[in-house]
Image (cartoon, rainbow, N blue to C red; front, side, top):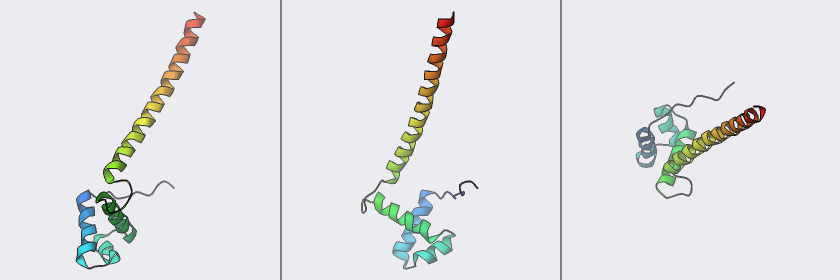
Length: 98
C-alpha cells in the first residue's frame, strides 16, 4: 500500500485552529473533533506555531520550505550531472571509434 493521502490545510485555517485552543478554553481533542482533524495534527500545528513565533527551538515554516526547495534542486542537479557524465562518456567513445 502507498503513502496515506494527507489533506492540505491553508495556513490561515491552521492559525485559527491553534488560536481556538489557546484562547477558547476548549481542549485540543474537542477543537480537533469540531474541525474534523486529529488531536495529533492540532498538537503539531501548535508546536510549529511556537517555533514560528520564536518561543521554541526548531526550523520555522519558511526554513522548512526553503530546505525542501533546496533538496529538490540538489536532486535535479545530481540527476543532470549523471546525465552529463553518461553523455560525455558516450561522446568520448564515439570520437575514439571514428
